[in-house]
Image 1 (cartoon, helix red, strand yellow):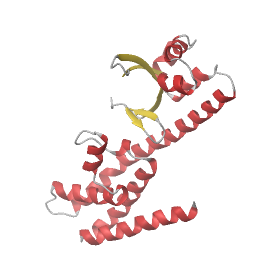
Image 2: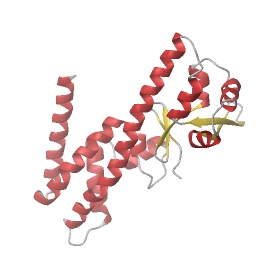
Image 3: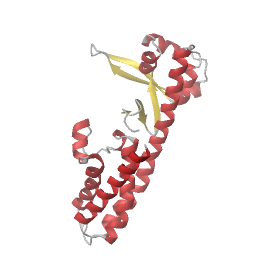
Length: 219
C-alpha cells in the first residue's frame, strides 16, 4: 500500500493509484461542521461493498495536536455523499470537485505511464556503458530534472521533506511530469547517437526551451 500524498495542484490525495478527497475538505467547501460531514457519511444509505470501496477511515492532527478521525472518499464516494447537498453554491463546488477528480485521474495515469516507460530509459543508459555505474544513471536523471525543474531530485526531496530514494513524481505538477517524460523519450535516442554528456544536455535544454516557447505562443 503506497503512502497518502496530497497533490497541491488539484488539492486532492493520491494513494495506491486512486484519487481521494477528505471529509475535512467537504466540510470546509460546503460550509459544514466536520462532525456534521462525518455524520452525513455515516448515515449514507449505500451498500457495505460500496462503502468499503469508496470510503476509508483516516486521521489528522488538530490545532491542539489531537489525533482525530477523518474520512477519505473516492470520486464515486464524493458524488454519492454530495448528491443531497442543495443550492447554487453547492452545485458549483460539486462541479469543481468533479473536474478536479477527472484531472487527478489523468495525473495518476501519467504517473503509471512514467513507471512503465522508465525501464526503457534506464536500459538505454545501461547499454551505453560497458560497465555502468550508479552515477551514470543519477547524472542522466538529474540532468533532465535540472532542465525541467531547475533543481535535482535530491533538492526536491529536501524541499518537500521526501525520504531518500522515494520517487518525486507524485509531488510534481502534471505539466512537469509530462515534460520529464518527453525529455526522457528524446534522451533514449540521444544516449545511443550522442555519447558526449554535455552535448546531450545542450540538445535537451534547447529542445525543452522550444517546447516552453511554443506553449507560450499557443496560450
